[in-house]
Length: 121
Image (cartoon, rainbow, N blue to C red; front, side, top):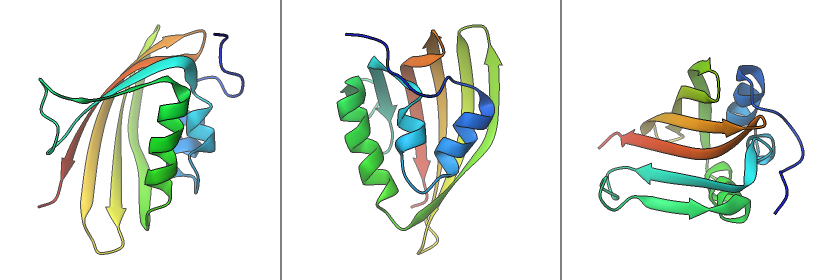
């Protein structure tokens, strides 16, 4: 499988992707063979949600960006082929979500991401 075309990972493109109205810009930052592991209130560290490939990641982003909520990139730190970032989200009813991610990059694309989410209860 080839490398995904489109944007190359940098903090500004990440901000536009996270804070945009669709997941398209964010999706462009993932390699075709990317994997995301998500740990949250429903999926413990020993049994995370695991998504393989841009197709599954696109499904997740389509679901997220179809919801009535806002997204904000709080901070991003990059070093070599690694990056870490924090994002905050808020649903229309006031429910807040904080997500922390660590990513591995290859040729400017995300190949691995571990995301830990915390939700208001």
